[in-house]
Each structure stands twice: as structure tokens, then as C-alpha cells.
Length: 397
Image 1 (cartoon, one colour):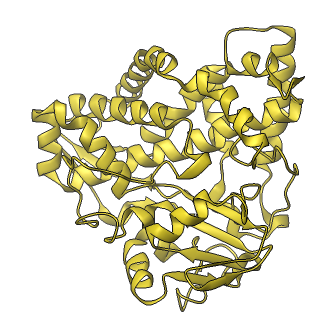
Image 2 (image 1 turned 180 degrees about the horizontal axis):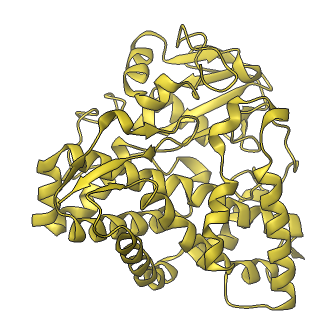
């Protein structure tokens, strides 16, 4: 059992993306569904659909007429902030509000900004490895991967760098399977924290994303403070857990595939292709939509109010879309993966995530060119809509 839910007995009619079997190894589940029931359905969470073919995932992702982004996390939790902005604009915003809300954050995540963040990221990765120097076994998830993106998000938002651990505590997406009244309230605390940071930025403006948002307008009007706080929350929710999951999954793969590991050590020029392939093969994020107008997808009638999961990881493994889809080919030249989403909500921070992942792997491989999984039974993966290693003991030499 996971959380408050009974175990899954039929993935086609009663799936649960928070199930422990899904967390440990979802690939066989997706493969079987793709062959037998490519658009699965479950009555859990009030009714939710699960397309597994790339074609169907893409169709939904691009369709803003029938599907709303105001609900991106499948849950019984009520929406706190209604449309058009939603809880975390622009990812929770629908057209036409979305386009201008997205434009506001692109500069902070553009090439120049990322270039300036790279030395900061590398220094932080070095410091994290210095902290565990001398250990023969390192938990590459808890001691390394999960500590990297929070510090970078703090820098972008202009909040105290030592608050990175606090921001990490606010992200508990694995708890969506608990009844709402039983969940801790980290998200409420996060918005209280962000309110205090906004007030401080109003009193003391500086050169960071928070002050940029406070000085910006949307449709000619200053941003509502809920919009500012929501966009700050977006960077925390979408920029921390997701990136550390990708870094951890990459290290998990390399620990088990010494040929790939050695190739990256001996031929660093392969790294950009390897990053794309590792992102494709171990994509962490499954997004969600709410049906706002009845529609049929893959022969399945979706009704207004239904949830729909968009498993980009499953789309990346669709053999109709990707050649040798279940193989990890680290020098794969053509790689049209959907890891950062499809359509208008394609991740605005994708290049930031790529940089963090590249620097994290380069720094690790420079320090530990030889490593392996110490205890496979001790590896633990998170389920839910962000999948990645949460415990990853690696033996280093």
C-alpha cells in the first residue's frame, strides 16, 4: 500500500501513479498499457486518465481548448488561486493570460543569466563533494543531487542562500495520495515565506527575479502580489525536485553502466548528447491537465472535470516515436524527447536544468571517475508526478 491507497490490481482500470510498483519501475507498466490499453482510466482522485502513447500525450499538451493547466497536480486538494493566473503562473495559466506571464520569466532564465550561474553552480557542487570527502559510500541523492538546485533557485529569487534546505522542505509532492486533512502544510508555509520575501524586496529592491517581477506589468497593470508569489513558487516547485531527480537518475544509470560512465570520462565532448539521452530515458515529470470541455482522445470519452495525466516519461519510451526507445544510447544524435513538456507550457527553465545537470555530472565524474551502486536494495525512488532517486548509495573509488 502507498499512503492511504490500496495497491493496484489492474493498471488499465485502477492505476495509481503514487503506487510503490510505479515508483520502483514504471517502464513495464507503460509498455503493457501501450499495447493493451493505451489510454488507461482510474476512479481514484475523482477520476483520472493516463495516455501512454506519444501521439496522445502531444495531442492533449497542445490542446488548450479542451484541457486547462489550472490543475497540474492530480490531487483531491482544492485549488487555492482560481484562473486566469492559477497557483503558479505561468505553468498554471491558460491563454491568453499565459503568454505574457511566461514572457516575464524568460529573461531571468535566458542564456546570459545561465552563463553567469554556471560558476556558482560548479563551486556549490565542489563544496557538496568536499563535505563527503573520504567516505567510501556516498548517498548521491541525499548528499549531492537534491542539494544542488535549491541553492541556485535561492540565488535567482534573491532569497538567503542558506534557505535552500527550507525550500526543499516545502516540496512534498509525494504526499498527494494522503487525504487532504492528513497532509502536512508545507505549501501554506511556503507562501507565507514568499510573502515575507516579497515584502522585503519591496522595501529593499535588488537585481533578482523577485524585484524584476515586482517592477513588471501584465496587460498594463502591476502584477498582483499573488502573481509574484505564485511565479516564485513555480521556480521552487518546478525547479528543485525535478532537477535533482534528473541528476540522481543520471548518476544511478552511470553507476550501473560502466561503459557509459567511462565514455563520458574519456570523451567529455559526448556530454551534451548524453545529457539529452539521460533526460529522455529517465524523464522525471508527469504533468496533469483538467478537462474543461468534453473531448475524445484515443477513443476514450473524457468528460469535463476529469483529470488527465501527461506522462512525458512514457511518451519518451514510445517505440512508435523513438527508435530503440528502451535503450539508453548516450551518443544518440537525433533526440526529440518530451522531457521538458510540449506545447505552450514547455519548460521555460529547460536550459537552466541542462546546465545544472551537466555541471553536476562533470564535477562528480572529475572527483569520482569510478563508482557503482553499493546496495541496490537501498535505492529508493519517489513516485507521483516527479520520479527520481531519493536514496542512492554509491560506492566510490
